[in-house]
Amino acid sequence: MQSHRLRSILLSAPLLTLYIAGLLVPLCILARYSLAANINMRTSFVWTFANYTKIFTGDLYLPLLMKSLGIGALVTIICLLVGYPAAWIIARANEKRRTMLLLLLLLPWWASYIVRVFAFYTLFGNSGVLNKTAQLLGLSEETIGIFTFGLPALIVTELNLFLPLTVIPIYLSLEKLDWNLVLAARSLGAGPVYAFLRVVLPWSLPGVIAGAIFVFMPVAGTYVVPELVGGTSGIMIGRVIATQFGASSNWSFGSALAIILLVVLLLTLTLLTRVRSKFSGQQG
Image 1 (cartoon, rainbow, N blue to C red):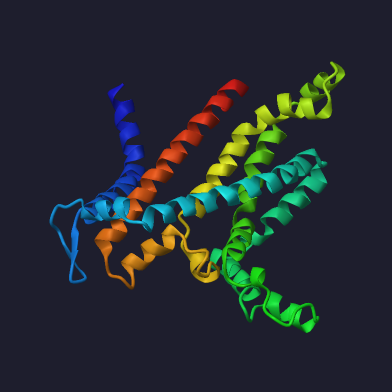
Image 2 (cartoon, rainbow, N blue to C red):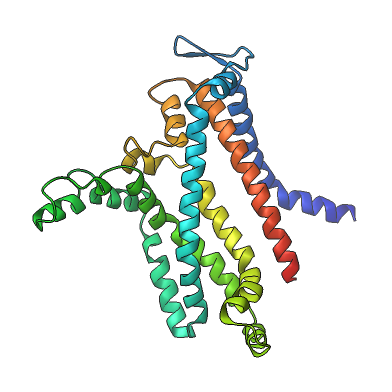
């Protein structure tokens, strides 16, 4: 018994070491910085809650946090609305066609994340491909607002980046569905909509929630996309945090913002994970 426990400890030691060194230690350092002060653009390691007081009493940072969460929720909802039918089509396709559709879905992921963001950077903007094309075709002599850097460009770019992460978990849930249950519901008089709501949707909810987690978490805290295509209307909390660690040289305040964002995302993750576990248990 003791040898078994010792073996388990030894096998888990590399992962535990990586977890402590790569997650817990940086989090402790971040928390300590958040309780420090910034004096003359230098960090003074006194103990103070001034950074958190500034966040909760100011007029900028909490609304910006809520805006970031709202953008994350909006992108997640659109991904689910687009991704669920796509996952349904893939799950119902024959094996040869299913392989081809999955390949097409994952093909953009063969390119680097930054490369794909820069591809959309060239599309938008006053001198971007979309505005230049519209002017060449005579559709507009002025720049079209929706094709400039801003919130629409941010949302479209995020959709392109994270849509596959919505489709795949939903597809995996639908693939495990016993379609005889749907046929049985239809034979008992259930219409297509009722059979979907009572049989298919509850079964696929774990995949839906997993897809929501995979999209909402990174989008709400993203930095690169708002920096490149967000413009002034697409500023998000991640961009502000990066500025505090960069140009502003206010690491203590940036750490406090990061801690608050992390706590909010962890609470959201906990809630969604519990909901997913509940529906996964019902399936079992």
